[in-house]
Image 1 (cartoon, helix red, strand yellow):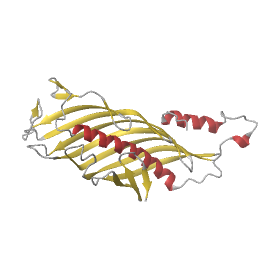
Image 2: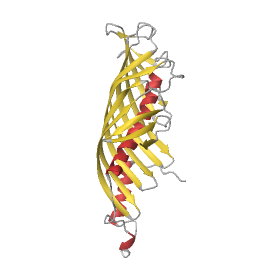
Image 3: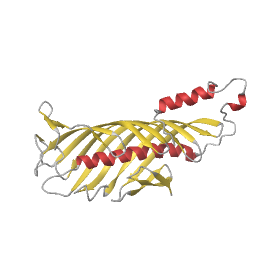
Image 4: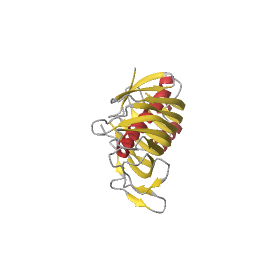
Length: 266
């Protein structure tokens, strides 16, 4: 099928124009989208939060993997002005570009100009942007993360991440029930997300959670009917060391595939 790369704002505008009649002739009102027969359920609203959170989580796992290497500063350039390491942009598995800045600290909390076995913690500040192409559409994502890993001192084989993030998510996709656009924002809290080394053998976090608050609007089209809906959902992803992790959206339970970003309702 043909894929369309389109931001949520553009998609929503296109739907709005069609709703106002610009996509058909005024003489044939029957061809215009209507809302009279459209039944929008709580599931429709939840699906948009699911979609945005799935993309963000796949990007987050990629960012953690890149920052939990044996030598995370490898390839990055030390900036003496702020004591941080500036890393070249990297592209995650889902096509999101991540630009990172790293800072290393010893056991006393003193900033270090290198990474070694005496490093106790690491701060990662990241900017995420890009277009995620899916089989059913495309998503435009932007976000920031501020994360700190502890437990680095000595030769530990795990890292524990805590921190926060935020972002925006514009999406267009089609499923068997409807076509949908979304324009949402989210805030995230990372709580004790544990990752294990080496990353090649442990590609998914062992434990911990990411919670998100997702708000915004969406447009659902079923047949010739279109309706704009509001989205406000809390999302919780709980890691378990495997590719498939539980994701709770409001009161509904899903299973998220961290490799593909696909979520299935339980």
